[in-house]
Amino acid sequence: MGYMGLNSFGDSDTAVDMYVDAVSSMIKGVEKSFRGNRYENSYNTDGAENVALIIRSGLFKNVEWDNIPEQHTARLNKILSDALKDMEKLIKGASDKKSEDWDEDGNRRSHLSAYKKMKKELEGLRSKLGEAE
Image 1: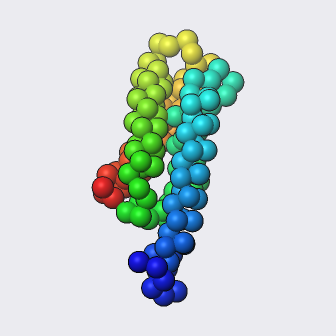
Image 2: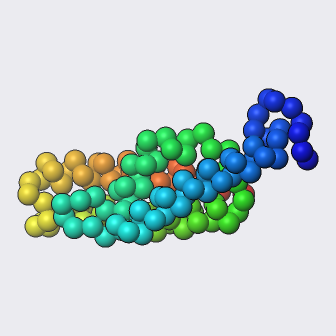
């Protein structure tokens, strides 16, 4: 392909390579942090919560997934799949009104609401990755 203009990164092979490298590095960073703190203690956020918060930050908002090779999107899909499983467990725990894990019912309810929103954010990015395939 080579040089085709100056309208977008897709007009230059080198710019495409740089773009893929940058997105791959973001995925690697999220993957490393997720695997490193997937199951934290009660004083820190779990990996699934952290992944959802990163998605909420907009880190991946403008990524053109059609330009990212499958080996990179597959890694992110695996993270999202694992994070969704973990989020389901968090939702289940926060849905249990009799659980002693919560200091007060209001705290449990606010976490349940937050977890449901986070689940939607995880599913939203996973959907975008699926559309790019």
